[in-house]
Amino acid sequence: MYSPVNGPRPPARLDFRLLVFILLLGASLRLLWIRAPLLDAHRWRQVDTASIARSFYEERFNVFYPQVNWGGQDGYVESEFPLLPALTAGLYELLGPRDFLGRVVTVVFSTATIAVTFYLAAEFLGPAGGLAAAFLIAVSPAAVFFGRTFMPDSPMLFFWVAGVFGFVRYFRSGSRLALWFGGAATALACLVKIPALMMLAPIAGAAWHAKGRAALRDRAFLVAVGVPVLAAAAWYWHAFTLYQHTGLTFGILVHPARTYPLTVAPGPWTFAFEKWSNMDLLTSGDYYLTLLSRLHQLLLLPWGLAGALLGAALWKRTDGRLVADLWLAAMVAFVLIMGEANIGHEYYQLPIVPLGALYFGAFAGPAFEGNWRPVQGMGLARAAVLATLLTIIGVVGFYYSGVINSHFRPKTLDVRVLQAGQAVERVVPGDALMIVADDYGSTSPLLLYFAHRKGWSFDVENLYPQVIEGLKRKGARFFVSTVWSRIERERPDTAAYLQLYRRLDLHDEPRDTVVFELGIRDE
Image (cartoon, rainbow, N blue to C red; front, side):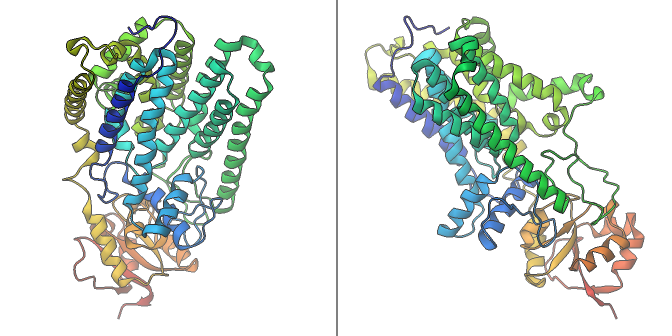
């Protein structure tokens, strides 16, 4: 275990050289397939984020009213604060509406997380421990993949780690600048994604170690914590009021998601998504084995998990250890309370990566120390040898994790929905609302996004003639589906109703794709 004498030494030139190399390695991995369509893993969430950015760019730029494309003409939705869509829309103004720009913004945040993890770990473990922590988060398959997706999780993670670092630095140095930096980062983390409220646990650990109960009399600290909490409460109350007006939700405060209000359709919503745990899930061994497998393979890699466990066993009970342990306790509680969310979406476990990196740094710090013995006294050569070893270890571990096939999917992207959307875009007017039944189900944004249209999206099970009639009164002019054979087989009443209307010829559409113009009867 790395345990500096008389406190951590200040970073040396070699430390910064290695940090720059680690940042370049992490950024390089995050740029893999950066221009790929938004059809890799978690494409639903990515396209939802992209559709909000597009609405900011093409319609009105108002961050208080995020719009999705599956809620009709004005699909205002209960969501997190749309920081990533807003930043991306700003880039659209400069460079044009290109989807990969949203990925680029995420890459910037994710790469910055590597740097701030170094500084947080260095506060407790010295620069060598900080380098070890930075290396793990740089090559973590989960941190890499989600560090280039069009999703708010990596921006949240950056603000989370930065916020904890700011408060830790305040309690160790008394710097008011660090305090206000920590408070601002905490506010942004909680606004970008509500699970970031868990970061209050490690912040409380830093406060308790530094001042004990006296922290409750530190007015500046209380303001720096209280303002972010109030800002988050104000935003999510506003988001809830949007839901009350439109009935549209990402499942932030309202559950379940993947449903419509009765004014749109009655359901039943077979695939409605709840995020809470239940006894069946919590008593299932498969649930815990799945989470353990993610830790081992996707989040920390086998050697990272082993190093983190050893670091947890060896790290002395210092202020840094208390911060890490309370962070871990908050994550455990979150996994137990929000079981369905965690089993359904592995990105909810992303905060485990910088936490695991802290424990890993407590064990692996000596390997990154400036007096690295195999090439003693050879500064540049020492850095070159260590950089080569890090590249081999990081890239090999990343490749054998299987994340390329399971998440990046460069050879198995579902281009069919992209091709169908492009075919529909050529025949449906730009201002026309559509009713959609694609391969992804109720409230899916995919076909609507690639067709560059708005409307409503349904599972085949929820698609009744009465629903279509009701949406016609709300302005729907076209019906589009990429699963027409399923509709004919499972909803023959709906298929017969639709065949009363004119079917458009798409010429080069993918198989099973149809478009009916609802305002014109077939002759």
